[in-house]
Amino acid sequence: MEKASQDKRENNTSYQPEIHVRNANSREIFKNNRLTSQFLRNYANIPLLSNVMPEDIEDISEKYQAFLGVEFEADTIKKVYIRRADGTIEREVYVLSLIEHKSGNDYDVAMQLLRYMCVIWQEYKATQNRIQEGSSRRKNFRYPLIIPIVYYEGKKEWTASLRLRDRIEFSEEMAEYIPDFTYQVVSLNKYTNEELSEKHDEMSLVMLINKIQSEEDLSEFRKVSEEMVESVYGNTSDEIKEICKKILWSLLMKLKVPNEEASNIIGEIGGHGMGYLFENMDEIDIGALKRNTAREKQRANEERQRADEERQRADEERQRADEERQRADEEKQRADALEDEVKRLRKLLEIQKQK
Image (cartoon, rainbow, N blue to C red; front, side, top):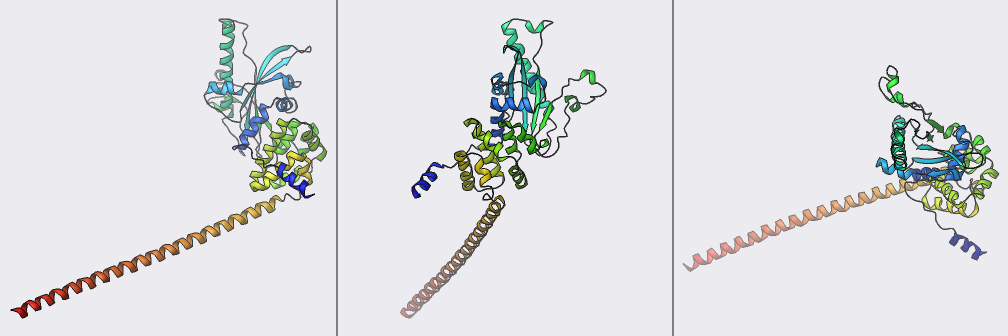
């Protein structure tokens, strides 16, 4: 029995994901074609994408971020192949997704999307002209469709305008001269846990975990069907399991769970499946962990204050010792001067006697 416990401890290695977890997680979510295809089918509400599968998606984010000369960690660009009934490719469209974690709105999202769209169309034009010179100048030339989507995780309602023209002056009076488009917002918190669990796929599981931003959310998460969470997690790929664990790590860090405790929790999930999170939820007392962390922080502050006071007392003692030493040196100097004066007077008296 003791040997088995020791083996368990040795196998349960600490889980330490990369830094800047939050943005990295979302980028990984939408770089994963299986998760992206589920997101587009179930949440984008675009009939053209209703049958898209993982093999129909190609991630081309890095290519266009290189054109822009900047990198937004949470932005992704996908080329999606729309297929005929026989499986052959009918056309290509682009899906541009921005991921927002802010609690408030980013009112310049439409302009950010436009910059991406212009780069995609410019590169498409250059590619087609290389294939057939001057093709972009022909009457039947068409630029590819770009579908812009914002995946929003904030709890506040998204109130930024969905139209580009609303960011430009004189948008009503001069509408015919202003370029325009609409982007779609998929707001995570518009979906209930029950609605997400009904989808019964990996993207819904990811969204369920991403919804947890407080102790209350954690309590609501417990009410979701444990069988759904366990079965989806248990049957998914190692790559998606790793994404789920990173999201949970981010959650535990947000809730101020100490690193060692968080490592144990994630390590156990990795070894036993998502059911461990439900089975041990009562033992994972987030409130107590936060209170313990607060107490530890207070004790550390008190220790630091005591050390500062001790250092100050030592400095004061050192200063007093220096002052005593200085006074002693001054007394010695006065005594030496007096002794020299006495010697001088004695010498003068001897000289007088000799005369």
